[in-house]
Figure 1 (cartoon, rainbow, N blue to C red):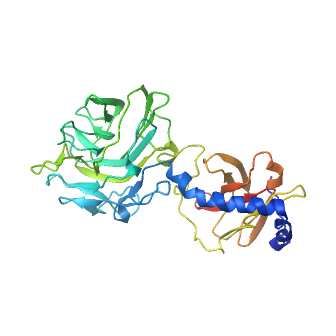
Figure 2: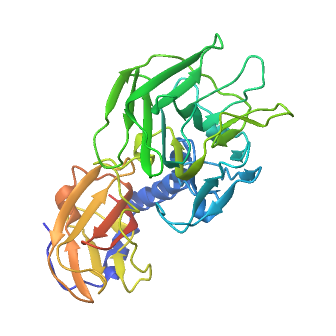
Figure 3: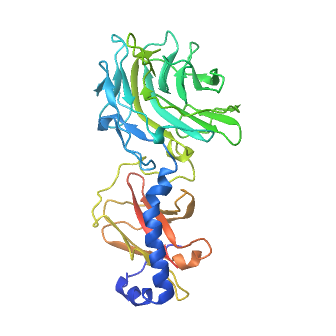
Length: 367
């Protein structure tokens, strides 16, 4: 499906754009692009990469929900690292240390799906230890919109508080070991009444549990590494001790765990982002009855067995094909007109990857 050929001057497409019908589609696309941030924000939640000073780097939420270190919590880079150059470190010799994120609509969930993941490295497992909690232990009634914690038996637990102020939990069959990095993830499929749990980012869920409980937002902070308390005598409860990295909270599963239909932006080292390494044009690309394709110019950072994939906004793969040529300046055409039944006017993502590098470009399609 991937046909190598000399790239034609993309300006040949320009005259056809300005007929009334196509111009209307272009204006519609511009309107759609204005809506993209809104569509992404509907996933809710944020992503915290602690090597970036704990900043919210999620591109699917509406607000940059950045928190702050509390009571001696710090960023550390002592090996072993999980990713990047640092992680959140919660010292076992200190009390009430955590990472505190102020309340935000992005962080609240009501009777809807919620997905949470993180990497954890516990150094002390002698009690219940909260990995994160959205709520306040000191209030009456207590509040927990959602929480992840390690039980006394070292199982992973998802927890909410229902309308009767009762804690409702679901526990994993697997346990979390001390002194090593473990991936954890939970997805509450609210409409299906089930919870799924993972302990590896690239495998199927270990547990699928029946869970059908309503849960409610609150005006309290998200505390990473403990359960926050407004009690002046003790600002947290049941602290986690050790290391935490890459915490993600969202209303969409594909934001927090690798899925077969999701665009993988970060699994491989990124190539240089200059036009010399990967170019995709014309962009927007116009599909018509006379044909229409997407030109791709691959730079020298890509090697043999290059895979080129096209995804829609939902992360669903529309096209995947390989291209075995090597070297700088290689060029080709994806004949998008052959997929007219699959493509509508809108926003897509093109991903190019080989065994060691990958890059993603946003593509706009007009029909």
